[in-house]
Image (cartoon, rainbow, N blue to C red; front, side):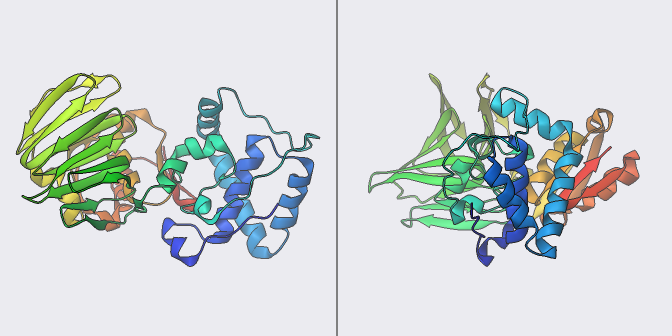
Length: 335
């Protein structure tokens, strides 16, 4: 089996080609379905050079350090606990692994369960990788569609253009956060996000999708939020959210806090530490893992640049007496 390395354009995702391959080998080994020939190929790979051996050792330590967390995610994705069958006599045909499958540290590109739900969200899912436009951790990007719709993509965001005609533009927000702006002469814009959609002809709005949870803030103009059989109209400085469990009521919005990310700022005002950590993880490679629920419930007020997110770890350590353990791949355990 041969693994292909990603180009230097992909290094913004936090791992070099050898590290990406090392994590892929480890995650596939822990999946437990490698043949004997593949195990031997893995041994040959990590014995290729000192750099390969070191990358393999770092990946193995990182996986082992996650312990129950990684196992729980794997069990959740497969429906059963993972088993290691390194000496399996089964034979199967290995699918080739393309360059795009390795982008962003796709650590187990050939394993369907990892692509569908990466452990700890350490790398993009398959649907995110296949998006028309996407951003890496900490990256922002501007996209203009036919001079009528302008998009500002925030960190770890993936969108696909479903269709575009003179009368209508349809976009899907797969994951992440986008600030939309439509011109006065725009045709109808429909944005699909999780189980609902947003329809407008002239408005500025911020849309965020985290799994099944979607939040919409209307900044200017008006729009319709459609979820199930409900249609809710939002005007400027109003917000709403929905998920698989239902839709919220319309609430007042603070555009300054909502749009702070466009100015490279993160603002937390009496926010539970668990929520702060979840937000910080959107802007950095790797993962901060909070393993102390008591600290997670404590409230934190802070303001920091999106380019200096690791400062939050120092603040949590000093303010709440947490202990930080730094692991390879940008993983930090807070206990």
